[in-house]
Image (cartoon, rainbow, N blue to C red; front, top):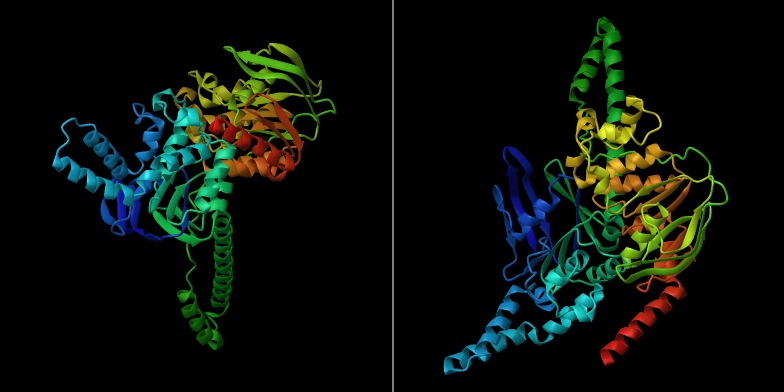
Length: 546
């Protein structure tokens, strides 16, 4: 159990939290939610002891171990991958190092023998003999190949490091597990594995995530941060959302009835206060009026952008033809002999762990890159707008937000352009901010404004939810569902893939493509997917036997 007792945390004069009292108990997974800037990550740091409270304290059941997801991706660069995972249980790793040092001594003394015996006992109690196999199991589950387990962390790429640090947090069955955005940079398969791990995890979990499907799948309770308070709701994210909407509706209805009663009483008092025969009734109604209090409804601090992609023209039957497309980069075959057609009703999700193949294909189809062989052809009625995964070049400019967006608009009217920015929550003076200094989330909102103002009937989106908060992701999800044109996209957000796509294309590690019509959940449950997974399992087993 871990609890916050009258916790207040101030940044300067501003109180991020005020007199927070909340208890997190064993056997539950809590989704910690709130608008950007509400203090979700800060609260996790307070719970983990990385930050001190201004007032109040954090209490933990004696003897329980807290584990948290490390955010510094370079902290363990000098260590082997396997060691970095085992370091998730600090005491166990210390014992292993001390044991090795003792046994490496040339002048092994009686005192060394006694100390080694003590360490061996503690090591056995902590299931130390299973440490390496447990660490390898976590790494394999998250998609870190066995050949990487004994390499240095510095040799891994960013997404691989994220997976190792997540394995480190999960290692050793911690009593309290604190996870800040654990699904970031994970492919859908790794997220699915993590979901199953947490569902079967018996201890306390507190997780911050923008992935609604993930929160719905793993959480048994929801802790909502708003206006410096944290309120606890039973149930997952959807249950919280429906409960909060119902509560707001009930409060609004109750207030409406009170306001109607107040109006009725005021009218009665106004009509009969001067009438002697009615004066007693008027006086009693005045007293009743004074007792009625209309509760001040405090609106949520959350703000939802309005995302609506409206094509300027209807798309024809001929959309896209891809024939024998091949691409090799620096000697690496990205894909070879790729062929498929896109139809006017298609909303295609490109999935799978081969991130490079997806991005290279989108770069080619958007005209940013040339294929080595083959060709593609867009239909004459199509207009395309592209959201790239790496949008650094897009904002290498000293233009203001308004001027930046104006360059992509046929209508140069300032009011027209600012209307699109307003939809994406850029208000007032925001329009004169320079795009070069925008945050990641602000840049994504700018790009979504660009897509909306383009009027394109084909959208190519490569991981558009990166950097977005829950509210913006929800708005984007609704916008993509409503979009009447053709959609080709990648996303790690299961909810967006499931609710938007009607066709799934998965790039396999060798660059080949599986193409299936249907929803993502149907694809995961299909016989083809099951056979593919079985092939991978068999292949890995054969490699281990070798």
